Length: 298
Image (cartoon, rainbow, N blue to C red; front, side):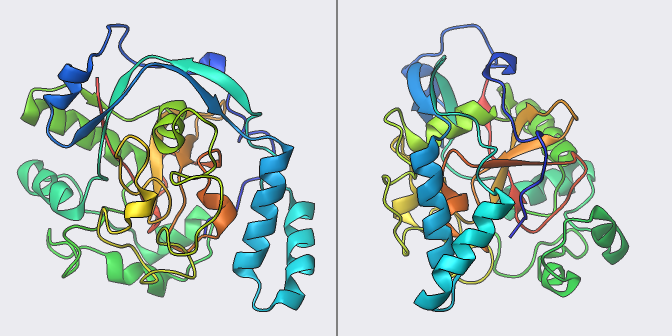
């Protein structure tokens, strides 16, 4: 779990968003790219209101407390810390159509990149991990995700790649664009949110009621990353997989402090964090076992 940041860095100003190409993307254009899903242009409901945030506090406390008696105290603590109070205000936003990869970039995908151009393999030293400062997991929990001699951990080829920075993700985007002769980029935070929740303001990919078995989260799953597309309920209305749980995802949206906005939630998180409206930010050189990414066709 990644603790929310304090201050105003979580504010997302719609007017500052880049939406990529100004050309009109068609569904046929998108469907010509294997493994990508078309998200039509138009309005959608973004952000959260008081009702949704109250629900987020409630279900997070229920998910985290060890007994019903602990729920009120746990919820009060999180409310006092204001975990969800800095989310963008619920509003209607209009976006052009875009084309998002149905799956996260996997270890097997990323290995080809590493082996082809010699880019650094996913990983982080104990000293660098400690220096990042946002620690919930001990370094011993990081070690099973470390690559060795260009090889990802055994059995994790179809798991999302983690321990890569925002800058590593951009390097992969550039390389993959050249390989496929297709212009890729990272999704904006608003594009990611629309792809996850559709147009009707639902809280999760599957609706607005939390379901314990819908995704890989703290109390349901392997206590680590899971293979892509392993939880059908977390498939979005557009057929995009893992839009709640498993790993947080880098977007192309930066804060005024030049930190990157991440969307989604991680495998160790609690229900309120798995809403499409939730977001947080981290320095662009961060590397963590909870951070992954996916692509947009430009």
